[in-house]
Length: 375
Image (cartoon, rainbow, N blue to C red; front, side, top):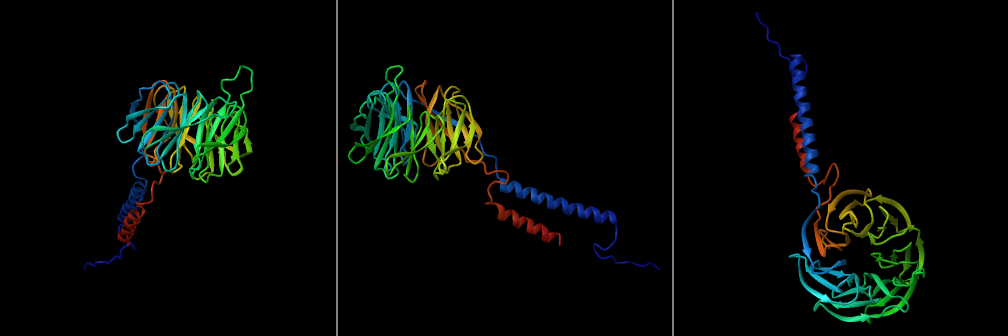
């Protein structure tokens, strides 16, 4: 007489069968975890690329700025004294404004109604009405100083800070540095601040309380008192400040970009880049700094979290300044020896090994279903 024996699941039976079942379950769990991590990570970020090159019809473009609405890019040409205006929707020059002088830099009021352009050749500042694209005022130079270079406007739009130096002084003379403060309501100079030699660029913190001026060192100006309150011992060319105001990135002829902590006004990091880093601009979300490399004809992309170069983009001949659109999707780079502007399409930043967590709920649902099936 035969006897059938009932063996409860998981309590005996064929050992090989139990092993195979356990392995299938473990494989399923590993597959679910892998799929979940891939889902969270998402596709790999694409590299930034040059999508357009705009001929300006000028000789040597330098400064560039984009209107607050992102619709127009204004360029300052340092030889022809012309400011080409680019329509950013078509990337074509729609008009060129005859300003005069050797133009260096340009900045907009926060409402976008006026552009302030420095005339390096005659030491003046021209004011452009952006509705008509005509020069409506010219502000005289500081006495005894022949060159105007950098310009920045306070976040409330009430003042423009302009760097000056006696660039054309006799050989052997000290090239004194000054910063003038312009009241934008009257377009008159209301204050002049002495700074170290060769002041080149100026940037203002998002809260409007301080101005950082580059030169043989970096001067920090209290915009309430218009006095220099600190000097940072680092030679610098151009400067950009992060949107949260905590750091300033400064370029120089050395193959590094220096990072300044604006709380302590000390250099906290140096980022190796190519020779003669020049222009610098930071994305609106503060995650990346874009730096032009004059002699290499390229732009380096710095991850501001790690302060490392994550990408290098070839542009035109001797790139100088650059500006990023308010939505952070494009960078406009002036190529000073090409008479062109390169347009870089900025991709979404990589979010790391786990990527965005937006898909995490879907992953957890899949994992829960798997665990239920395993009993």
